[in-house]
Image (cartoon, rainbow, N blue to C red):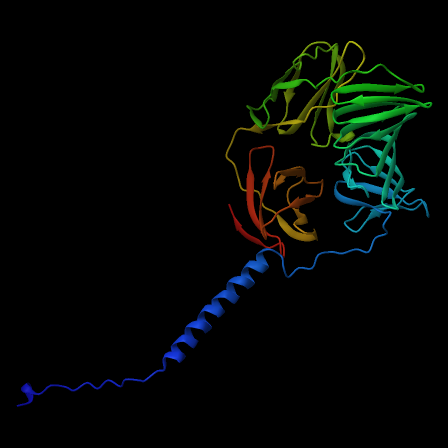
Length: 409
């Protein structure tokens, strides 16, 4: 009876040693660990060698720079454009153009930040018998110097006719212009020497140098506070331009006699991008009519009744856009150059005159649409946002390994 028959199934059982099972599990665990380790090391740039330059001990390191920065070599009088490998020797002159700025680290660990349109000469940057000697002359512009603990260190900034020895844990700003100078101390202090006479200027004080004399010390004035237009404000142009009223207030306890307002299309306030440059304003308002679409930046400083002038406050930005639909901005020719550590030079090409934002920094593209900016990122990818004056934007996630666009956002 075929219906009562059943099929037979045979199962073969393998005898596997327990040690073989343990070995197989161990191989899987080790393999997974190696894969994870390689991925982690790659993401943290373990396989990218740091740039190690053999530089002389008396050289000053340019640890950060933006825009056009140049060095005139003392030995050859040759002027070179700063790159990531550039360093400065005693006698060299470091100069920033209208869009340039640089941070120089000296042998004692102090950091000298040179603002746009500035020039300094490095006189000394040596370490002898455990002592460290730094001497810099501010020839033009503004220089901010920050020091830490100054054990066995002699850090001097020359401005106008004065020598200023910085104390430990000091944050000081020096200005040189038209043969005179200004000294502002926001932290710590400096010992100023003019004609053999020493004066100590401490935290929260200001003094100026003119005709070989140091003025009486004053309380350091704080820049005015911007009120309107608000930082990152977006103003809509209905078609005939936008009327913008700039307003500000004195800082508490700092009444001013007059104000100096600048409005620019450039975040560095390059001379050819400044639209408004009005000094001697006595009102705390200024009106600008028929402003066309674009990105704008504005800053203000004030002059007190004694003649003391504040530093510029941090620029505020606002955007004038046209009504209409937004379109996505494109970009190409992405490239990434690793400076060292987590610092990269990011470049590309997009529309002329747009704003590029990345890692808290921003820059504008040139007339040909190209741009370059220095960023710092612990990751192997970064977000880049591009904006124009009509409210259009483009968002890109860019690989810091090869400059490839990983995705849009």
